[in-house]
Every structure is written in C-alpha cells, then in structure tokens.
Image (cartoon, rainbow, N blue to C red; front, top):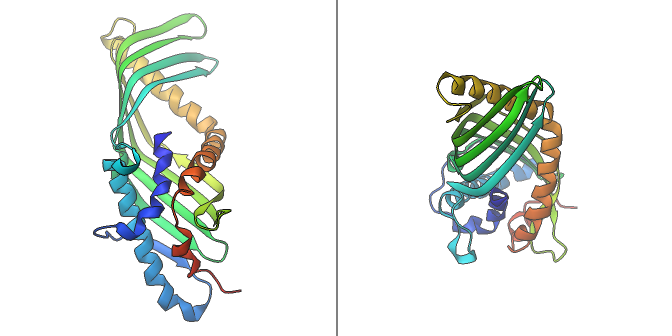
Amino acid sequence: MKLLLVIALCGFVTAAPNVQKHEVIVVDNLPNEIENQNWMVDILINQLINIIRSFINNGIGIIGIPPLDPLTLDNFHLNIPAGLINLDLQLENIIVAGLGSFVVHKMKLDLKDLSFDVDVSVPRLEIEAGLYNLTGDLLTAIPIYGEGKAEFIVEDFRIKAKFFLKQSDDEKSVIIDRIEGATFEIPSFKSNLDGAIGGGDIDAIVNAIVEEVLVDYVIRFRGAISNIATLLVVVIGNPILELFDTWQFIASLLPRA
C-alpha cells in the first residue's frame, strides 16, 4: 500500500533539482498556445518524475514517509485454488527491491479532458521473504509443501493506465477523478523456494510449478486485479493529494472557456 503514496509527490514539483528528460506528449487546447505551453508542461512532468524517483529511494522525512526502495512488508498470503494444482503460500518478513529504477516509456497529458496517460515499467524487481510456508497438492492427491527462505524475481514489469483528474472541493489540489484502461504485464517471473519437500532436485520441480501457477493466476484475473488496484489508488491516494496545493500549477494551462 505504501507504494500508492508516490502520487502525492505532485505537490513538490517546484522543488525538483536536476531534470532528466523523458518522453512527454502533450495534447494542447489551441494551436497558437502550443509553443508557450509545451515547454512548461514538459518541465513540470519531468520534475515530477524525478521527484517520484527521489521519494521512492529516499522517502519524505518531514511528513514521516520512509523510503520505498527497498519496500518492507510484514506478511503476505496467497491462496490459489487452480483445480489440477492448488497452492497456499504465506510469506513473512518481505523485502521488495527495484521500485526506484522504474522507466518512463510515455506520459501523455491531455488538457482538453484533463487526463494523463501513463506507461511505466520496472526492469527488475527482487522479492525476498525471510520465511515462506507452502502447502498444496497436485490432482488433489500428491502433496506439495515446503518451508524456508524464498526469492522471486520479476523482470520488465510494465503498467499502463489513464488517469482522469479533477479539482478538489476546496479548489486547491489536483486529485484523481477515476482511472481507466489499467493493465499490467509480467513477461518474466522466477521463483526460488529453498527447502520444498526435502530440497534437492525437488526444489526445482516445485519452483517450476509455482512459477507456472502464479503467472497463470495473474493473467487469468488481471482485469479484476487491475480494477481493485485502481479503486485503492483513488480511495487511498486522493486524501494524500489533497494535502498539497497543486491546482495552481495546471490551472493556467487549461483551455479557456
């Protein structure tokens, strides 16, 4: 959940240090305003990207938010009743590293409908658990079990979504109205569970099963997962966004009535 706090960083865009260039596409309102507005929006978005990266890596001490890379979680429980293969996986003392190395492929701001297309990826996520507990079965007959340390590696994790923005009720902040078209891709997922069913060669078999089942589960329920995630972003993110006076940055760029 802590990762959802990154969207609050738009309140700090004017304080960004060095600006690294990213692909930013702006759909402007009137042709004669393009030259004047594009460079301002480009700077604004690029500063926002750099500050989000700095926030993930360093946190924001003044409001008590710790660094999010690495991200620490106490526990996670996943139950997958897949029919032929059923798994129940519990993880404890989890560390997720690599979020701060995200890559921005495209950000497209449409000032006409105040929407923001986002396409970002994380080249490599390393997930370690100090302790895992796995139970399950094959064909409801052959048991699968294990306990020990776990490591998962996700490569080229990619997220795309379109954010529709609006003005907050107090007219001071930019908040999220809704999110549409959210989707994600996991091209590569590797599992390394140590100590499954006695270890040795069996570990490799169990890891192959876990990889196949988890990826298939995510693909099958990708739509539902995306819908839940976008709802959480709005519900949790907006109260944070309302802490910052950000409407002033975008008000002057909006189309005139």
